[in-house]
Image (cartoon, rainbow, N blue to C red; front, side, top):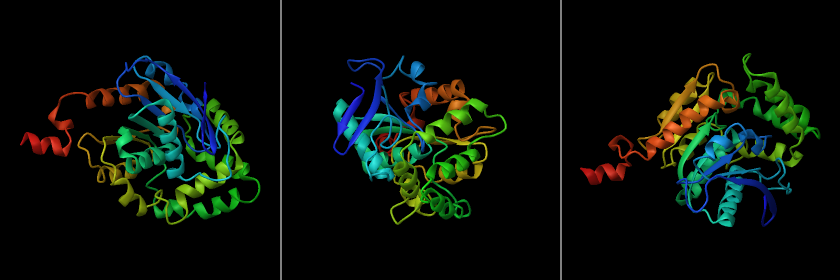
Amino acid sequence: MPFAELGDVKIFYTDDGPGDGDGGVPLLLVHGYGADSNDWVFHIPELSARHRVIAPDLRGHGYSSAPESGYRPGDFAADLVRLLDHLGIDRVNVIGHSLGGLIASALAVEHSERVNALVCVDPGYGQTPEVAAAFPAMLEGLRSGDPYTTAIASDQWCYTPASPPWLRELHRRKILGTAPAALVQAFAGMYEGDEQFGIRPASDAYIARRECPVLTLWSGVQAESAAWEQGLFKHPASRALVWPGGGHRLHAERPAEFLLVVGTWLAELDTPDSTLATPDDKEQDA
């Protein structure tokens, strides 16, 4: 059954790959703002050949239902915990893009026992105050009664001259299929109010609470963000990489390279190498 009734929300998801405990730690794929789980069609066939892969539509996105509220990163993370409980999954490796990077981080901080490792793809956290200065005007546009015009216009920053035209059109259509409440409240949940951690310096304290291994892939214009995040990692296996020339949806633009980088890093986590040991392991070894 591809839908899960989880209290106030009905979540669409797919569940692919080996069963009966094969494939190691399952993967949970978390799409971004104004998108859906079809973002991962480039990756699921290869990933599910080796892992159990869970790919949900977030509330208000795709085929999932759209309650009137519940669109902060922590709310989305709570939905995903309920989905994992529904599926009988204790612990996952999480791959999250954009808003999904905030949600994945909220999972790792607020529900650390459920997260083995994170991959954050051009995440929405860590925005500088200079970038965030444009957010009040965007929120005003989203709340104007026509959030679609504002969201589609804002989406244009996600691409480089090398981005394929089909990717622009695909995400224009995904935005048009997203509930208005999700477009307004999910953006506000990232960047407005006392509880948000999308903007520095609030990002610093929250992101530094992630204890698990983290691989972050930043787009080509985000080199400064990669350097910023590198100083906040706790686990020695964590990495912040920059993809020159990559747009915001780098995993869709370069899926084969993305799968190679992520697959290699996840495999390294299973290697009995002292450089990947946790701080507690290193103290015990000493």
